[in-house]
Image 1: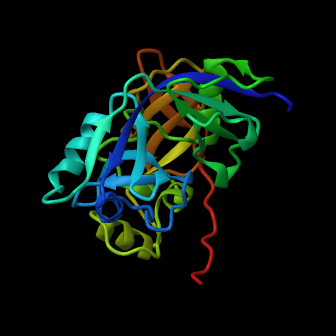
Image 2 (image 1 turned 45 degrees about the vertical axis):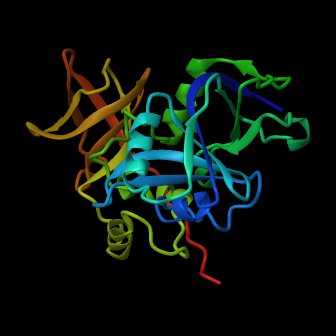
Length: 287
């Protein structure tokens, strides 16, 4: 199996049930709910009417009228507030589940035959850009054999692959395309019908995904903290969003490219030695 790492995380999981659950969610999130097979999972965006991000989450279909929505710990209230805002005369109930946790495994592909019936096997984010791994969610998740539990290593893996995190790279000021083409492609269906916030997603895509800011990977030569400004020639051009050692992620102005070297404005000045965009993916042609 090679170097297989894992870490336990708190995760908010909401159960959606009711005869209108599929239809309601289809009109609210960016992923195609109607084509999601039983036990299938997909990443998706919950947007506000203007197209700005409310929650990045994953949806799993338990059966025809039952779904699980999982998001970063502490973000279910925001998610439910947004969903309930548009839930008018709809037979769909939401329940926040107690006691659920997530085991993130990186560096290995799953064996579904070894996953217990009460455990959800879900894809990791970033599979299209080289992430290898999966997540296990449930109230009684069993740790697979052969993994090394190392939360720091999993965080380093996330940053190295440019995977965003709610509250760090993602908040209600973000346009999805800022994170990268892969992020949009993994979370958005281009063939489903309308959903709330779709207009901005479609418009940005039609214009080449040109956004004012981009998520970039940076390499530091001195200490830095989340929230520090990235400064070029005396002007603030971005913000550090995540740091692990000398590796970091930053939301940087789109017109800042690689060299010259960036100066990071922090209590201790640091130097950003490398800046690059995370690779995009190629969209398959519509059938």
